[in-house]
Amino acid sequence: MTANEDQEMELEALRSIYEGDEGFKEISPVSFQFRIGDLDDTKAFILDIQWPETYPETAPQMSLDAFFNNRISAETKQLILSKLEEQVEANLGTAMMYTLFEWAKENQEALMENHKPVVTAVQTLTSSNEATITCSTAKKKEKKEQLTKAQKRRIINRTDNKGELPRGWNWVDVIKHLSKTGGKDDD
Image 1 (cartoon, rainbow, N blue to C red):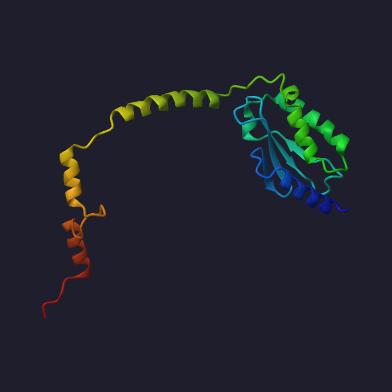
Image 2 (image 1 turned 60 degrees about the vertical axis):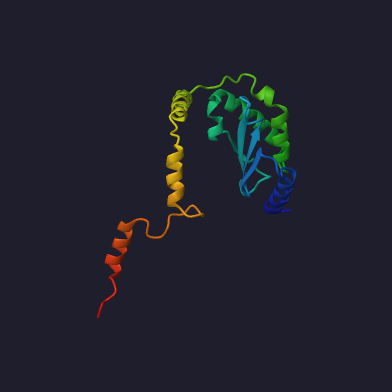
């Protein structure tokens, strides 16, 4: 079989295996993302894999450059990639995506054992902004203006049964319209 036929068969298998799995994302027929762990798990990471033209005879390109992985230190990323590359070497020449994903799932704890979340300025800024937003929305909720019964009656009296204003309610618009179109000639 040619490399393209092997890729097509593996792609079909991946689609059927991971159908409905939120952790698997097919970016293109040769590029994939797989989330190892749950979204709220601090030890979760997203693995990007791209197939070269001669895959599976050559190793796929793997990276952990997804924005989701910004909290993972460079040392931990390097450890994960080196361990995955060992698995690639062991499976070279065969369809290995399923094997890689499942191996990463099974060994997530070992891969992330030295993981200490990286705190960046963006995360700190986001945390302080969330506190500010929470305080300001609480204040806005307190100041919500209530209409009196008389105000509600006036609004209801101005509209028809469909909640629409009657035709010509704004006489300025009527005058503008007539000035643009011209009135009837009395000739």
